[in-house]
Picture 1 (tube, rainbow, N blue to C red):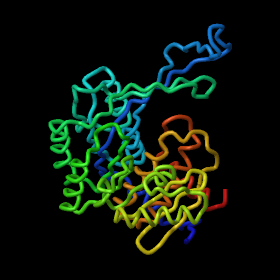
Picture 2: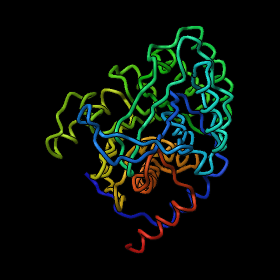
Picture 3: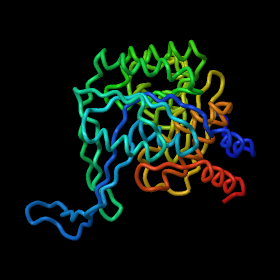
Length: 335
């Protein structure tokens, strides 16, 4: 396994080319709600903390595939977002949150059979106490899938790269994936998949699949007890899926498995405060880098830097091009 520690100034040039690149993003959008309060005592009724809600402190941000969209926009890219929402007030909140980040909701299809998915995180003293999920996760019906495909068929022609962001909430059906791959092949677009399914058919036809260590273990049926196990796991997935595999490993960095080479990139995180949405940052940065003409290893190194920034922030966070370039320069100087 080859280890990549530092790259030269060409990374900065790649980041400069992010601006205006168009990424088609297909996936499960989620509205992330943060409710803030203070805890000062335990309930006399049960051994649970009592939260005093701070009025006016609720915060709504794009989550799931919408967070990946948020990351792309923050880095200077343009997002073509294809997904479904319910026909409810949460849809309006999500659209507002997306527009605040410069993402237009042109490809958000209304599905009357489900609510707009919302995850509410209750936070006190900067610690998450509980998460409450409002969702229905059945696969979309053919009628809804066809509406999504109508948007994708047009959008993919102007896209520079494609992301499939699967959160297992019902948008990413096997037939939808097959048709996205067929369109990508027709128009010569690279597809990155952030995976959730165990069926290899969801991945054959992609350029890169980005499981975290837990997902890679489940997909490969290999227990990652040591470094040799992880290498076995990645090589097995690359062979089975017929694609490049990037295993994200948290504090241990990332390992990229290509046809003839395994490359390890050590983490660039200086501190880990919150890992929420870090995978969205990774796929968004990867797609922009590939769209900007980067080689795959360079794209992975950039994604590693971007992830190292966002895990040091609270909640579902992003980074921008200037912050990313500054971070790369500081690391090069041996911060």
